[in-house]
Amino acid sequence: MHELSVCMELIDQVEAIARTHNAERVETIVLQIGSLAGVEPSLLENAFEIARLGTVAEHAELRTERVEPRIRCQVCSHEADAGPSDLRCPACGGTDTALIAGEEMILARVELLQPAD
Image 1 (cartoon, rainbow, N blue to C red):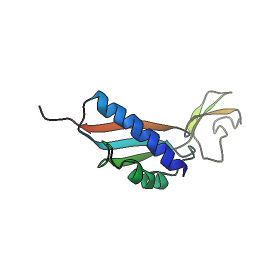
Image 2 (image 1 turned 135 degrees about the vertical axis):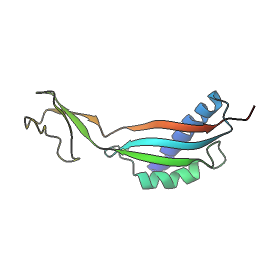
Image 3 (image 1 turned 180 degrees about the horizontal axis):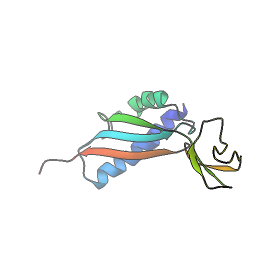
């Protein structure tokens, strides 16, 4: 399961962040996932249930935010949202476009619980 290895890496990153900030635990993790990233959010959430066990994120909530494809035309420099199977420029109709969003998976936010002083 690809999503489990993704979650294991995510937990490693989150634990490092928690250590850096001397956090007691992780409350919330927010991931931005591109619709073309090759990661299925529902499978990721199921894998997260396994990956978080015994970690500082054991009781954390995982929130996912979908990022839709976005392109930039290499001919006219127009930027636009795009469908996953239609990456043509809507301004000039050109096919020489670059995908500028939609393939990423970004750890957008981690909410931590700090120990009381």
